[in-house]
Image (tube, rainbow, N blue to C red; front, side, top):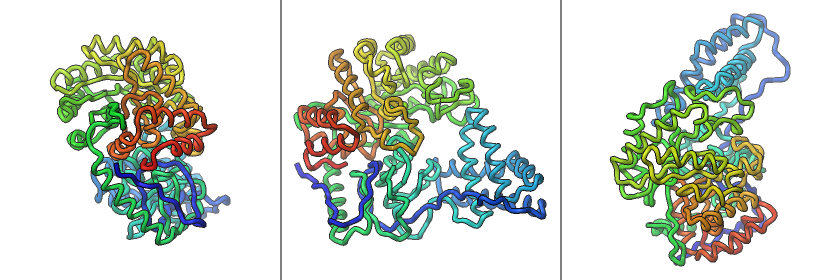
Length: 566
Ligand code: PEP
Ligand code: MG
């Protein structure tokens, strides 16, 4: 089988390291995104409050118009995000609060900043859909304040040429607007391996490195090479290196074009390669070369609503998807509400730490009807299709919860029922939990958050959230061993499965299927084909024995065939 050798930069080239976050290599000039403007330390004196009120109003109007113009050139999710922000800029309640502040003597920029701050607090306290709007409000605030202080707009720049976007951090709202034909790579100073930036970069197929210390020093126009497989950024790489990058990219494309069909190790052990699917075109998902869906995130059906979707509506959506996967497996995850997905119709009460609160399967303690209705819809859609439908519950913490979910699924007429392993408690008791379910799927994004005690939405501690952390790998191994003993499949559907080298380690730890974003599957399939299962176990042992995440990755790389991308 053809192999791709790793690239080595010419000695002396400046190089920064971060977390590999989007596949491939991009070379181009840096275009920096301006940081959100901060207010000057000194409050300016105001002579004419009426004038300040008018300036603030005009700035908000201008932001609304700007967002309208940007939304006009886009479609789908990207346009919807900008439309929502434009609405926020014109929100009468915001205008009222700004007027109140200018009336009290604030200058326009201070008034907008302060009004957005108090409004954000009220929205967050209300929870549910209003809380989601708090983020839109932050975008509006940053843009309006930038206008009023005559600072650069804190949004992805358009230098007019293909470029590498460098930012402190990138919000999902900025990320969804990136055009992969113009953005050759993304580098962020902050951001963890399971954040939205990473999930979206993978979905868009943009090479990306996050949590990259040193990125703050990169200036506009500097040529850099972003290696999203290795997690490195090379500054001013020489021509010979760039040529090698281009040749490698072409070889990779050719190689991966030949990487098709079912996932198998070199010794023909079947490791089904499945897709992570959310909102989107079911036909597009179905057309992708995969053995089915390993994670259908169903939250999209429930967002932005005051009432939950009816059983009929849900049934239609599931049926449309199942049709595209006739004969293949589709794993539907029941609603993962709560935490960063609060829903107006499923209030969880005041929670100081929502990620540790009523979320996932726990929501059914307060709102059991949501889960029973969803299971009924999945069962009805399953009855209309030849897809091999499975259901699983998110955030299950104990064997009892697992058994309760399986019982509910069976009552609804669903015979293949499992749970996600995302909480260390569930992983540690995997030997008791596995015999109670038909399968498990490990959500490494949340399992990393709860194992390492780091909020996965926090950009500041990316090294601790690195899925190569030996503690996380050990828990995966605990589940893998329990699965083997109980004769139950153990899938992995967190972002970890998208990293070809880590995918090998996961198989070595006992994963029997891997689920990932569509752009990752060819490289993972290729890596699997180069290694026997025994070799995967050796990689896993090497990674487990390492003292930290970076050395675990290095140890696995040293033990792997050279042709592994990533
Ligand atoms: C996970 O936690 O790894 C997972 C796949 O679920 P989500 O990212 O949707 O929380
Ligand atoms: Mg999860």
